[in-house]
Length: 282
Image (tube, rainbow, N blue to C red; front, side):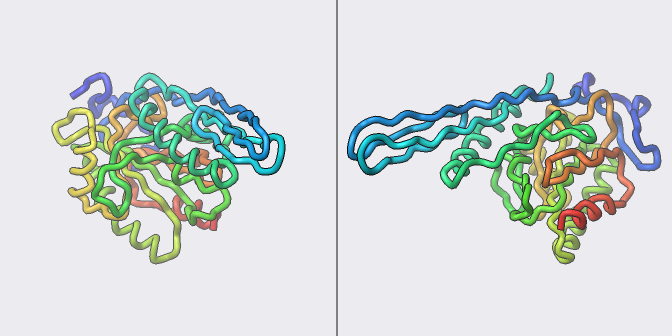
């Protein structure tokens, strides 16, 4: 066990003492990003029909002109990148590939939707970083995949996503187990009520107490029968609010703005704040 991250129960730092929480974890400091946008317009040449290609950090289109003279190339649209704190280097590299593919797809149909403005972080009132991603399993799938919060950004509600709940848990934590046992039932209930609530369950360790990998995510998924819940491995505590925190840790995010609405520790069995956000975004 990495004692730099996992502290004894006596060191638990609790925001909400009414909830049952497990041993404290030393998390990374706030994930701060300084967005850097890249992109430039391409050039065109020739007569009778010209080609212009745009360039950018992640995407950029290519268009063929017609007629005489030159055509105008579409301009590339850059994407926010950055290093997500001391413990998030590995995650950021995998996030880049997800950003690249999704941006390129969007640019062909009129341009990608810009990520909301900062300040960026995972504490209340901040916009979650665009590059956050984890290895794991999407809901309804048994195949490994890269999980990205970016895919749940729904500024105009066209995706039908009304609330995002990210839960950080660990093996060996009683309250984490108690909560995980309820998630599949809650997910089915929310769907039957017409709620568009997305849940991402993250595990920070494996059953041996070592740092989590995708096999730990698979074990957690199978242990609690999480068919309709996305499950990922978060060995770098990327959702940590800073300092020590107790698990389970719930981070509620508004899919319209990708801002953190609430962060709570422990399990109380009450998801009314999640449902309230979903009602607001209907």
